[in-house]
Image (cartoon, rainbow, N blue to C red; front, side):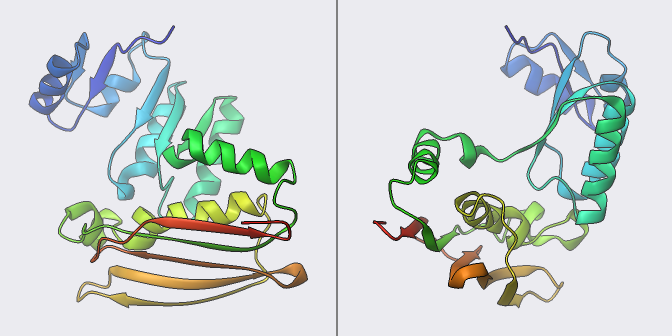
Length: 219
């Protein structure tokens, strides 16, 4: 059985407040202290995107298994560095993408794997929330942007529906704010055998947040 034993923050007061609300025994005012706690075996990393790499390296070097909030990192090079370190330490390392574990998502993917809708030929997925005023989305220095914060869910649906297959061609458009942070995007993905996906995300508007997966025998 899992037991919450500690929480870490850049501010001790913040960690103490969180620990009090959730009945957690230990509160640390630095991630270094948390990493060195021998009672901590698994850590959920929920910090802002731009510090994920430093947090992950610190915790892996101290022998902690990790569940890291999406996106894992700022770019693929950082992800490769994380994975290589986790493998060398023989530690569990996983991206926390909650949609993959919701009952509806698990059911749909099971139907696809069993061939209920036939061969998948098109995926349409998109979502939108009014989030651009949140610092973690609107601030470039924090690793903000709609693609990393919201788009990852739409991308993940296409990725799962096509069983991890990489598209052969990607075309996309989007809108940036004055700081170069993406506010929205729409992309068309092409796969072998004339299969396609259309994905989009928007941090300015509340959208229906739907996905359609089209197969030869149904949708």
